[in-house]
Length: 104
Image (cartoon, rainbow, N blue to C red):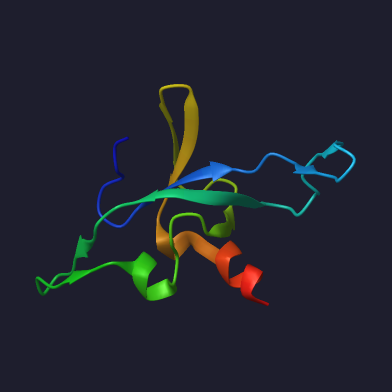
């Protein structure tokens, strides 16, 4: 698997929710916001003064996090049979960590 450059993320778009009965519900009309699962994160980016920083790390985004971002943010790429959206961490509006949710 290849990695996105800088601190960009590969996000797998969640197309619909599955009910306990197995019915797949289409995404609700939330306007321009989409939800996805972070699959890969780049290493870092370099600031103008030469320091390295990873915005995903600062924001608490990890591989496996669920994120919400604008529908038209980033660019779509394909790797093998998988399709991802390459998104910048600063385009993310909300973050959910499934591991943290299990602790509650």
